[in-house]
Image 1: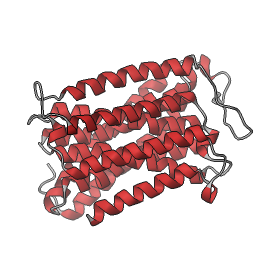
Image 2 (image 1 turned 30 degrees about the horizontal axis):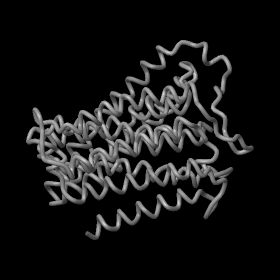
Image 3 (image 1 turned 180 degrees about the horizontal axis):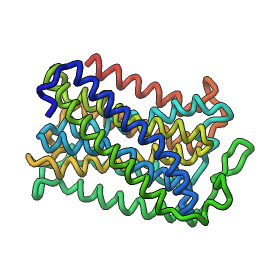
Length: 342
């Protein structure tokens, strides 16, 4: 569809698709906050499940489309590169939250648990890559385990939210998760949910266009699939998470901001499941490049640092942000330098 258009128009289409995804995500953030209040789900869970999955849809479309075309590296790197980029966005958001370190102000047990769950899910593909090259009906057993672990983790996250066994210490800088309008929980949610679903459809369509144009970048500029997946399509399809994080911080919905990133990253691990199913030449884990595994390790390291920051709850660190934000920025910049210069 895009093979016959000029380079100039290719960039224009890419920019338009990215803009559609970003604008839809801005509106989706406000709706997710309302859904959190009306369903009494809470910002952390709404961010992790509802908003996280919605803003990740464009990315999953890219990975599935790439896998269907037989480019395992493109599909894999888009998923793991997006996880690293989205974690970086929290560090940037921390710079914009002036009152205190974002991880301190948004203390929430559900976010801690989802971070642990994300580390577990990111460990599974490493086991698949280093293990035997096997596949049943074209699907590696680890993909099945990863999918089931995700579902079980979501269920446990709900339990942590509804019946926490411990609570973080409240300070003057801790932001409480409370509805802005006291009457919001009694209002119907159906209309808001329909609007949210329409926006999700736009994000999915934008993701398909981005995937097609990304494939043209690989072909026309002779770029590696790993480079395009981890640094171009992954970052562009992650922009909704960036925008929704900034919007949520501006609205004061701090738990929603962190929950949206962590939940989005957790959902992004399912890109690998979907990609493995769509890749018909065997296990996707044994068809990738070494650079793809490098980005997986980067995302895993950044998640561990974020978890440490959520536990430490430093009020203020270097450059008036948390030490975890500084470290996440350094880790990502190092990975970026290695990718570009390597």
